Length: 135
Image (cartoon, rainbow, N blue to C red; front, side, top):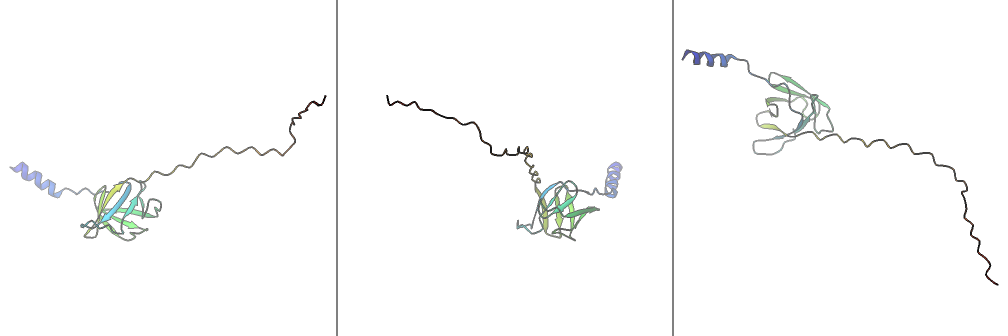
């Protein structure tokens, strides 16, 4: 019995684990009723975020289980980190990881430079001689 009480007491005083990152991807933010809000965002592996994957202009700052949005659409907002793929903004907006970031489109390999066009010069000509068949 004492062992159980000791274990419960130790668990109560243990420091909670705080997430210090979010998985890279696109996060959709919704109310409990399922209505999508304008707080949706994208996060890359470097800790940058933005309103869209193409516009990563903000930074995420993690501290004690919260994330602070610097720049972009959620500038100045705080969110409680629930897991690596879920945060809660305010009292009623939950943002969940939806899908990975789109892969960047690779540029087509550079085509070999074309040879400069040769100036027009006369080429060989074919001359056809018809025999005179009047005889």
